[in-house]
Length: 167
Image 1 (cartoon, one colour):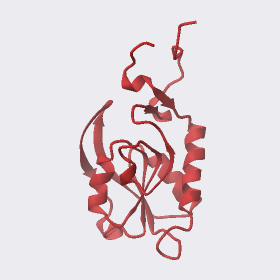
Image 2 (tube, helix red, strand yellow):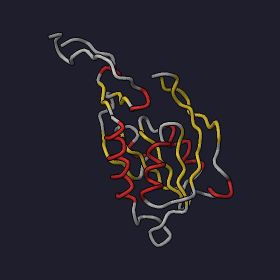
Image 3 (cartoon, one colour):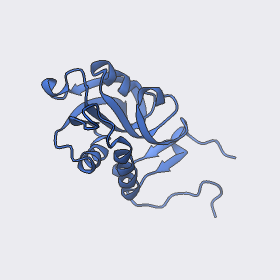
Image 4 (cartoon, one colour):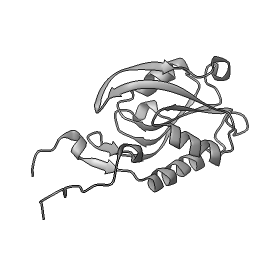
């Protein structure tokens, strides 16, 4: 077997798959909010959480949607997480009744930063890796830590070498 870089063990997500998995996340969250099962708001962690948050908010009929901008990656290198844009402070409070949605929890650094800000919020991701799982309350699919997820907004249609061999 040839040596591969970590991102070469790829899990490719299509728009259709992301939509199905985000709907499954909404179904799992339905009726789980603290106000007789209802949620007050959805907050997307930008940028990856925006598409799943839109789908979850639509499925659960949550009309209050905001964003928190967190940067923790520079290309495929993960660094220190920092907040670039916070959601409305009056809306957020300590986070109770708020769903915070992201596409993926990897190391958990991003969610740890946001959880410190909003300790009573409910954190949900579509995909989770083992290191980050303790930081997320609800997720749909777990992938191995050494798998790089290719989201549809990161890809274009092109030829890809086979995993093994060249024929």
